[in-house]
Image 1 (cartoon, rainbow, N blue to C red):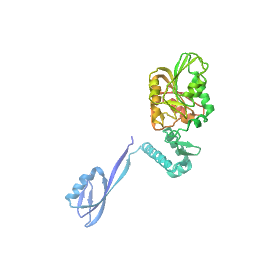
Image 2: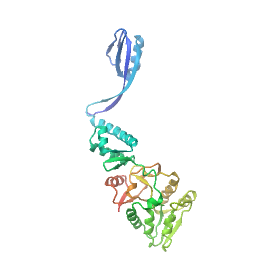
Image 3: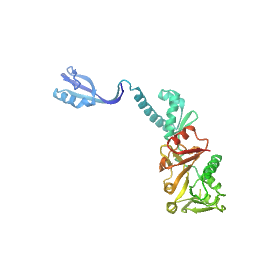
Image 4: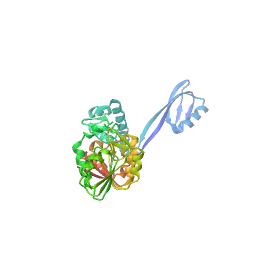
Length: 334
């Protein structure tokens, strides 16, 4: 027998009266004289029941509504799914209040096993809502507030060098490419110095400077308003240049990439240039270290279906790699 789960709103009535009333379910309710009587019935029966009360001149003194879960045989699976979904929402709310919680504390709070909590946290992390730590979970604000350029340039350097070298190996002589602004794309540029007949369009002065002595590389700078702390160009003129070109490959960077929600960014003013890069390229290659994976922030740049390849470090978790591959993109770990 197939099971089902049904939510039924239940109403409790307190009635003062001295008559007998037949409710819509066919049963007879007796009331003693001048005595308050409790009657419980589904909301669907309430209107007809109240009409009968009026006819019998009974007085309604109180009404309370509640939600009852009715299930049939074989519905344990559906009920457990409902309970798990509710528990995950409550975990997110609780961690946001406390800022950090351990697996042990969450297990006690929700009266489930630690293994169950770990499974819940894995699911929650894939949605970019929280970040797991060793033995617990914290609110993840890393993607919402990007670190200054100088700080980012000193983080995960070895991994970024590996990513840059692998990305550069995908560039063929004769290619026209876009190199996004970023600390990772800088290492791609350093590996292109000896290439021949390659055109690089970039909005990053650091990237352009790396290629200034490369005889076989033509550099097109998408000039605009200069961000002095990072030497990135942005704004109307930058967008106009990128929109006017067509390239084989675009190597893009961002603080967050998610297997379901795609690439997002915390700064709205940087989104149009990145979206123009996606539109200009036949193939988009995301170059991001493992700290960016599974993250989600405010502004959408592009859906995950717009990314052809993701290059990241071997430090990326097997779970993240599997989720991105399941989303249909090529994942290269270096």
